[in-house]
Image (cartoon, rainbow, N blue to C red; front, side, top):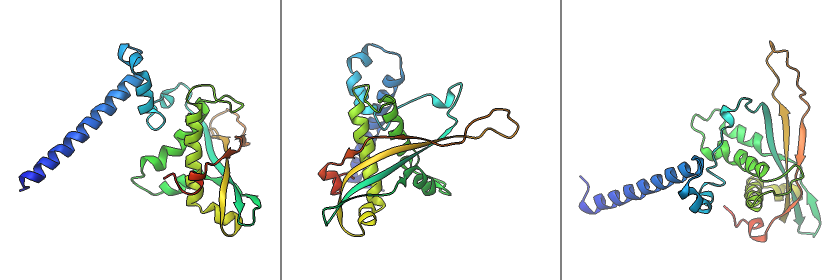
Length: 214
């Protein structure tokens, strides 16, 4: 049997978890519920809690669910020890995520959704010219950029690009979209030629380039 001290610690830990769960459920409810007095008064706090990791949407139940494969890719601009700037090839981050969860019976939420949600968040807050159209535009750019920097670091992109040391100066993200072919019995005709959406280069802050974001 646990001592009194350990029972108190366990009780406090369970209480903290219970409060956290209740807060999260409450914030999620206010986010998806119709506008009301509480959500109008505390809308900013709700948005800060929900975006970008916990955003809710109804795409699965839409009359026309997504019928495209969207792959997010990134390349790096690296300044080598000789002062020359070199551009890397494209890294297919979506393909890397797919390989990471292939055969994994219990893939983590981040393995499955982090990159996809970051891209959806960016698209929802920018127009077709990649210009922000809302107050969360800068947040979505920073979120997507930081994921790209972390993935490039995971791939040791700086060393692979320069063949040695160097500093990551910028990243460029693009999406590759292909339509899902219809089944053989369908008469629907769709193009399977991929289309690309290429974003402008983003400068990487020095703290991020030196591994300050984890």
